[in-house]
Amino acid sequence: MFQRFRRTRLNPHLRSLVRETLVSVDDFIYPLFVRPGEGIKTEVSSMPGVYQMSLDEVIKECEILKAMGLYKVILFGIPETKDSVGSDAVCDHGIIATAVREIKRAHPDMFVVTDLCFCEYTDHGHCGIIDHVHQTVDNDATLKISAQQAIVHAKAGADLIAPSGMMDGIIETLRDALDGGGYESLPIMSYSTKFASGYYGPFRDVAESEPSFGDRASYQMDPANRREAINESIADEAQGADILMVKPALAFLDIIRDIREVTNLPLAAYNVSGEYALLKLAGKQGLIDYDRVMMETMVGFKRAGADILISYHAKEVAKILN
Ligand code: PBG
Ligand code: ZN
Image 1: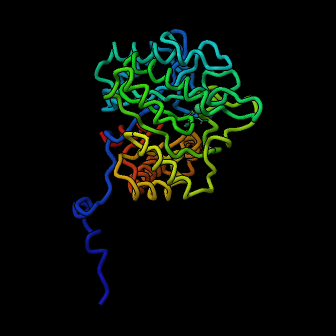
Image 2: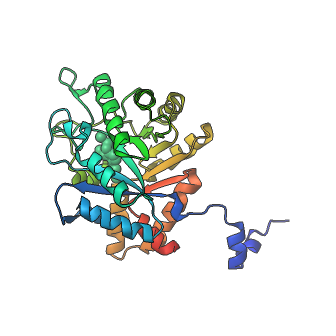
């Protein structure tokens, strides 16, 4: 006697009753790129539909996002000036601090996540202060300025802080700094398992953050390592992270599942720029049914174990779900 699996597939209502994984607009965080100026909205060629925007345009964009049910954004900044230590990122009048303040003023009901890193703010494009002897990022020196950056974000009114630099000890450092500054209730979403990935290519065009020498392999993870990937996230949970993350998502679905199995914390998947670009281009060329492939990809992230999706597709998904 064989099992008749098809019995529950014959009727769309029955299919919806037995569906195991749902994608909701509530799952999404939408990335925004803010730059100085006024009236600027520049599309980036490698990421059609993604723009560098001046703050006035970002504030208009939030209106559109809210109308679609998208209340959560993550901010990336392109500063007026860059230097060796990323000063703009630790200044109360820097691009991100200003953006958070103004967005929260115009839209108190928006939820603003800040990416905490230095690569967009340093003239060398690396994620912290350079250790010239070892030609890498100095971990502990970068922890110090990261704590300052966290306080700048907190003072500006950020709702969630997301360190993405892959410095060891960053979560403990930021938690201590935030608690010490009276921000015990401000949560941290760690980019806890972040791989050194070619899929970040288009992002670095938008954020203007390509390293001027070398690469990020001495601080971001080797895509070949599974056990280390799990350890990275467990360590951040132990240090006090409130939400964990796997990044990129598409080639790392196994890692999302692995981490889901070892933690009870909420888990985010970052559906990165290169993943977005692949679908976009294939869709434009008419090679795939774009909407269908996109939704299948989103459900795949959730089925793998992600609770939260950070994705450039968020608006397109919302259009389909609304
Ligand atoms: C900054 C940062 C990066 C991304 C998010 N935060 C780039 C990088 O590590 O080079 C990548 C996002 C994407 O590709 O969509 N550290
Ligand atoms: Zn960085």
